[in-house]
Length: 306
Image (tube, rainbow, N blue to C red; front, side, top):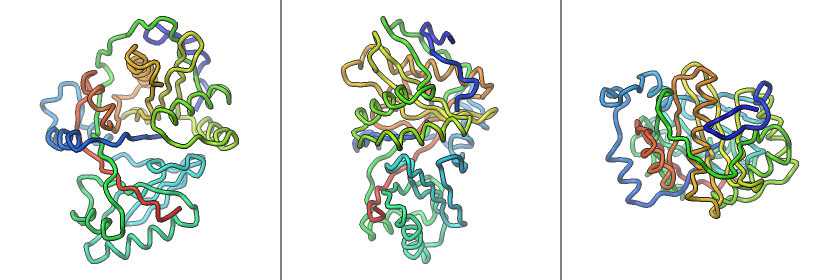
């Protein structure tokens, strides 16, 4: 067993090989994100944050992997995860086209996704072209759903180690039951539909096969309390996602413990820092723990492809 921040992580990650969820922010939160952005070329006021980590956070593209299909074109990039059938993991991003081509490109991308019967997020970033692409989406009935801050934390950042009575951390990829418990926590916290057991088992197998995925299940006195995921991309960085705590266990340090556990795993993997998309609920917490904002993402829900 591995000791992480004063709690135990059951099962080793020797062969272990988890997905993003975003809470919808208020207008005030979206304004805060916009007001605190820093240029990717100006991180002199962020001690310990390397330019490489900032670039990774802002420009990393999810590669194809077991269970993850990527369709890359010069104008956009589609990512599909049929065994994780929610917007976010299923997305159209990195939009780079002319204004004259925008409407035709929207129709083309929708045509590629539609046979999969998956809702997607159009994910816009500061370099999206045309700059008014959101207006083109609006003309196709697609509106802004959420906004997130792109945030980073250097690997040597100190994170307080909470003393949570009865808390244990488990490798949620180690067995099907643990993975189902972790996913159920995520579904409850983010109000997403529950996934079928066979779908979850395929996703667990795919994440084990990928080799770079980590999923933690936090329990308190044996009861599932929280879950969180992470993907390692050494040596540059690790992307954390899916951090969730059941309402009855909030305010007890579980979220911070999950973060501390992932930070230790990242250190052991030899990466330079953590990157995350912080939504309305998580961004203020992450900021208080030392994460710094270096960019943004905006999410536009498109259900026409269901």
